Amino acid sequence: MRAYFDHVATNPLDPRVLEAMLPYFKDEFGNAQSVYDLGLRARDAIELARQRVASLINCKPSEIIFTSSGAEANNFAIRGIALARQNRGKHIMVSRVEHHSILNSARFLERSGFEVTFLPVDNYGMVDPETVKKFITKETTLISIIHASSEVGTIQPLKEIGKIAKEHDIVFHTDAVSSTGNIPVDVQELGVDLLSLAANQFYGPKGAGALYVREGLRIVPLIYGGVQEGGRRAGTENVPAIVGMGVAAELAKEELIERMAHVKGLRDRLVVGLTSHIEDIQYTGHPQERLPGHASFLVEYIEGEAMLLMLAHKGIYAASGSACSSKALKASPVLLSMGIPSHLAQGSVVFTLGKDNTLEEVEYCIEEFPKIVERLREISPFKKGWQQAV
Amino acid sequence: MTNLKFVENVKADITEDIVYMMCPMHLLKLQDTIKTAQPGQVIEIITDYDGALDDIPKWCEQHNQEFIGVEEDDESFKFYIRRLN
Image (cartoon, rainbow over all chains, first blue to last red; front, side, top):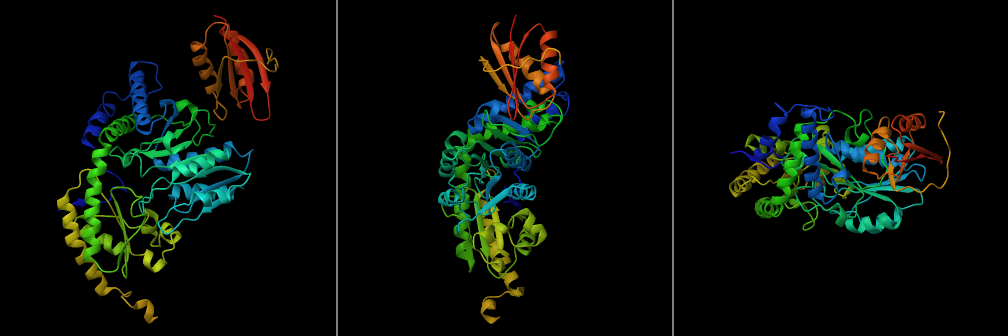
């Protein structure tokens, strides 16, 4: 059996999305900037996609800038706003549980002479709006807080933070890559000025992302060149990917409630199943305020990477911490910032469910995963009582 | 820069803010915006692209539109163009 439980890494492409994309790889290959019919049709296809994406997050089509990924959208937002507003001030704030595309953009600015506050979080990985207020200075021009953590699933209180930002005339960005298409995301309701999203998180293709930029907000481009995206993001448009993103956005909007209910049911079963069959396992992140298909755990005395490999051997695909930390074999900064000691943070495992997962797959995981944990613990140097022994 | 005139406090009917957008956005935006304006209406283009100081007056001359003038502040230029026909 194969059970793909790593939707936070990427979603499979919806066949309906693929179908819509195919003509733009073949007959409709035109450059959207060309003046003849082939180009005009490509441009029309992009504008239809723009309307669909805008409708998913409740903004105007003109407020959507297509990018190559969520990471590009995040880089664009952080650098573009900090630079555009540097005459007003050179202080920005991001949380400590951001994706690396935010954290490293902030670090780049720090090196370039900006001051950056990395906001602390509580044990659930949540930012306290009061803390945000406390760190605001006259120099603050931008606050960026992730909407929902891909590592622990926690959904941040964006509305409250948005109000604070507005009161202080500070631009507010959110990285909504892991939330858009999975929970309701409405830029008006959230009170954000910018929002990043990526198509492959809602069954669209890789290579398609977008940044919502509220009308009237000035932003310095990240990529200079031609007149694409109103001169704000140069580069020949990836028409098939943008078309796919549009269709995926439309489907996500139509099917959102149904998808949420489906993954939540499976997730709840998985959490109960695993926590009742495995000793010394902790459910991380906020128990209620979290993504509906997201189950993240700390399994004590063993290491995440080993669990992933043994799970994959059984056809179960999961994740451990952030992609970076799993590759660099270091503890996830998100987990450490939540106050989890590094020896425990090593045992992180994240299951993220999708619309096509079945109860049968979840039951299979509940059956196999405890056996894997047991086997790994037998050979683990960090057995129970290890901490007391040293 | 033969046609460059500096003005102050011109009231615009339509404003387009393209600060941080590079060439040729100033001309494309002007071209698009003038199509949506009524004859007699004034368009304001806000840009920090200094090439516009040459281009916009020239464009107006070539396209028979009135270049009213430009206002400069610390971070941008504001170009005023009246649609004639």
